[in-house]
Length: 410
Image (cartoon, rainbow, N blue to C red):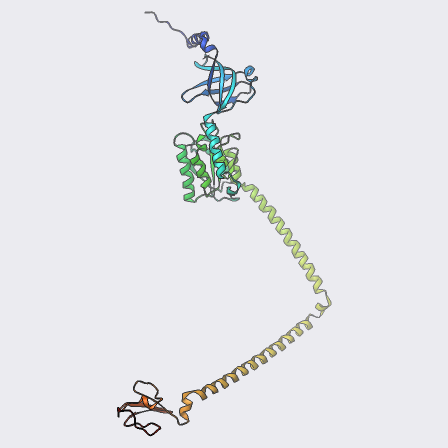
């Protein structure tokens, strides 16, 4: 059997003619969401129209694009009047958009606005919760993809501005199913390790789908709860994510974030030089003024007889010392006299002084002082204390001052 061989060009041309002849494909309206929208300098617009399960590449040429009353952007839901055909050069089929109407915001944008409104109401965007960035960080952390252009840009800027500040890279996926978990864990780890003074949370540009990990509530709350200040640098300057609103400061790009966070060493050195010059000038001015003041004071008449002034002050000092010694001796004599008087009074009142006058005191066997004849028992041994010792005696009998015998114990 003879084979029919044609070129790819012929094949694509044939398929294109078939599609062009199809009545349905020549003029129909489709419903979907715009993604990957790009305005070309030629005036043409290239984008993707998609729904939950499929997508198709689309182009709107300048003559048609100039007629629409709004700007196309990612996430906008639209109704598009299209002609579907094959782009012969690549063999891919695409929609040639002739007219387009805004249907409303896309699902992702609706979720974005809902979460934004929720967190705004909770106060997570309030300025009072924004932490101040350190003016002179000792260490800087970067949460981003380990292989993307973002980390390279940040390292480049950091080396240029201040190579002495080390960077700690926390590698994460910045899109896809693992991104949210890894970003959240990286923020938590940085806070637990306490190695860095400030964090840069960054990734390059992309569609709303590409950036969606940074619109998740889990990531937003991790950014808000971080004790370490966070600078968000997600996407391009026109891209905004929930993480940008919650972070302590937003940078237009990852490179701009590095410029914000890392102080320029040359600028610091120049500032220090200016401060040093200013301090030297102020010190010299103060010294010059003090010298002029001193010369003025020493030129006064009183300083022309400096020796006399010195001797007068020394004489005053001697007089003050004499007065102090006299006052000290007088106070000491008064205190000593009061002491002697007090001791004399105490001596007169003491039991020892009483004994020296011929008195004594008696204690019974219970060591209680005998005050009454009733405190004594027959045959009891008593202690009699006199001025120079003690005497033990035994009671044989007792008699009261009324001449009566003691108790029946005798």
